[in-house]
Image (tube, rainbow, N blue to C red; front, side, top):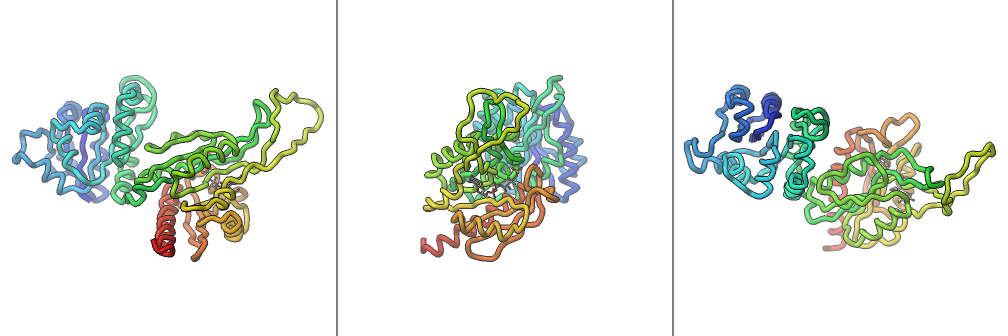
Length: 400
Ligand code: PMT
């Protein structure tokens, strides 16, 4: 692939040399474009030696006045690493006063930004607003890592590893925008059902599967509403997060957001039982045995299945045995269009908490589709591939 590597003026510019080397090693053609500030940190000669190409720097020191247009047209992907606060502000607002920023405006392919800066600069409202603009524009963002920064502070702001940036480039190169115009409602994570003010019943769901689905949908251009139980994950960029705690709260938020949704995916591990009357005070420890009388929580998926209008409904089934059989039973009893079945617990190291999963897609009509072990993010993309096929088939069947 023909890749443009824009280098901004930050201390992390030296790490971009490693990125250039990695991209070359992966067989890409790399054309480096440096800002004037970047040249203060690393000499263009370093990049020229690594890529075997003259580095583009000054807008006015090149052969043709329209070279930035020609360069933009000749390349397939633009990655900017490090993307400094200043560069991100310029890109967000369309300011174009050097080769890289003019090139950005002339470039029509996928763009990946790998920000790096001081933690306060990163967290500043201005930077975050610019970032939101760039995310909305569909650019891939490689989140900065957390740690000790060159400025002596600790926190997020460190340029992501070259391997992580290279993986994001690969993803962006193959990124489809086939969910543009779709509103997708996703539930994720566990619910917590209080037993008293300090105790609750919950489960092992980390939210990773649901968050991967939200990230995939947003990357494919969907408007995403993510209704999530308590998890320790940052919400994916460009996604509207609605935080809930209990099954009842999740139900309320799902029903509230349902009218806007064309696709509903229920990846949350909703508690099946709760205590209807939660004591106001902490239950005191006694020597006596305690037993709990629990009532069922609302079955949100079943309620959605009963409503079933124009939206496409995808449920999950977490099973410890008879996966396909149980998942199909859920598909039918809850009137879903698809159920994603995964084995959990026991000897399975997949399903709950892991970064990977292995699932079977049960369809109302058609053969079951087994998706072998892969990252939850990759599984999420495969689920959306099938959801879109299902959508097309339903439209064809309805003659619309
Ligand atoms: O979060 P991770 O750590 O990444 O783990 C991912 C996962 C294992 C939680 C996920 O892949 C998964 O399987 N989610 C569904 C878990 C679950 O509750 O399965 P279930 O078979 O008990 O429920 C079937 C379906 O009904 C699910 O879509 C569930 O969201 C829904 N449900 C269940 C109970 C209830 N009261 N309301 C519901 O809507």
